Image (cartoon, rainbow, N blue to C red; front, side):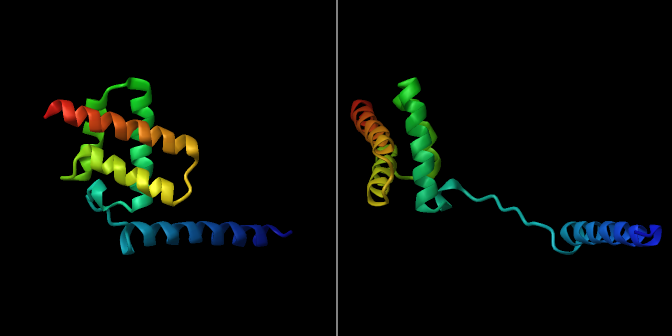
Length: 116
């Protein structure tokens, strides 16, 4: 391979990277929006509730779990967890995940009953 061919390949590579960066930074940069978590799709909400349930299983603190679920808006934490449980059952989540969600739902229902 000639040195001039190698130079052309290297030049084309650098030109392509430069053009891509210029396009991404100046012509059409990414727009970030401050969206709230309640705009998530149901599957992502369920995953978040499942992560909260896994944290609850370790911590055994329903108040902390309720605060984590409060980011989803005006619904009560037990309602949010119940909706996630229904979604998980309807969409074939593993039984171990469903059991963890059920444990969280039960704890939040008991906790909200104690608080009232």
